[in-house]
Amino acid sequence: MPLTFRKHLVADERYESAGCFDVNNDGILDIVSGAWWYEGPDFKRRHPVGEVQAEGEYYDDFSTIALDVNGNGYLDFITGGWWGNTLRWRENPGDPAQEWPEHVIAEVGNVETTRAWDVDGDGQLELVPNCPGGPLQVFKLLTDDAGRGTGEFATHQLWDQNQGHGLGFGDVTGNGHGDFILEHGWLEAPADTYAGEWTYHPDFDLGSGSIPILVVDVNGDGLNDLICGQAHDYGLDWWEQGRDAEGQRTWTRHRLDRYNSQYHDLIWADIDGDGECELITGKRYRAHCGTDPGQSDPVGLYYFKWTGDCFAKQIIDYGPTRVGKGCGIHFALADLQGTERLDVIAPGKDGLYVFYNEGYER
Image (cartoon, rainbow, N blue to C red):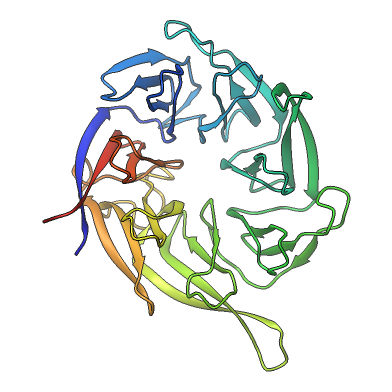
C-alpha cells in the first residue's frame, strides 16, 4: 500500500532550489527558495531574501544549504550557480523586512549544485560544489573557540582533475573514512583527509550523474552500494558493490527505472516511518530547457521502496506539464506538521510545492 500525499502550492515561481529551516528563530520551520522565504507553518506570508541573477529560464541559485556561517545564532544559507562561477552565502539579517546580504566564499567556476557532507569526520559539515569542469574542492567553515562560525572558510583541494557531472560521498571501503564518487570513478580517502593523497579508481562510468550519487548499503550485505540517476538522460540505477573470486571489488548495475529522465537530485530517508530508508527523487523539469531526452514526457515525483529483492516504485505525483510535479535541483524533506512523518518540499521551474505526507490510507 503506497503513502498518500496532499499537494499544496506555495508559490508559482521557477526557482529550482529550496531549503527548509527556522529562519526567524520562532521554533517553526520556514521554506527558503530563490528570492523569498515563506513563513511557516502555512507558508502564506513571504519575505524578501534578495535579487537572484536570472539567465534565460534559470536563476543562478542551485542550492539552499542552511548553516550559521557568522555564528550569530541565525541560520544563513549556501548557494552558487552555473553563471556566477562562485560559491556564496546569504546572510540572515534577523529582520523579516530586510534583504539578505550576499557574500562570495570562493571563485570555483561553473557550479552544477552544492552539497554538504562531514568530509573530515569532525562532526561538522563541509561544503562541496559539483563543478563539472573543475577540480574537487572542499570548503570548511572556520570556527572560534566556542565552535561558532566566523564567516570565513578554508579551501582544501583534494583532486586537481576534472570531476565531471555527478558527485557523491560515503564510505566505499568500509574503513570508516568517507570517499568521493565522481561521474567516471571514485576517490579513496587517505587517513589524513586534507594532507594525504586521494587514490583514484576508474571503476565505472555513471554518465550524467545525479547530485548526489548516494552511497548506501542497499541489500544489507555490509558493503555500501551506489544509487545514481541520469541528470540529463533516461535512467535511474543502483550499482551493487561485490567481490570477485580474487577478492577484488566489483560493481554490478541494476536498473531501477529506465523509462523516466532527468533524475538530478536524490534523497535517502525513511519517508514511511518503518525504520528503513527509501529513495525519494523525481524529474527536474526542463533541466536543460528543452534539449534533454524525455524533456516533453510527463513530470513525476516518486519514492522507491526496497523490498529485499528490488525497488518498488511508488508515485507521489505524476502527470503532464503543469499537472504533475518534479523536484527541481535541490529539494528538501521535513516534518512540517508535527506528525513525525517527512513531507516533501519540491521547487522547480514548475513551481514551489509542499507534499504533505498523510501516511497510509485507513
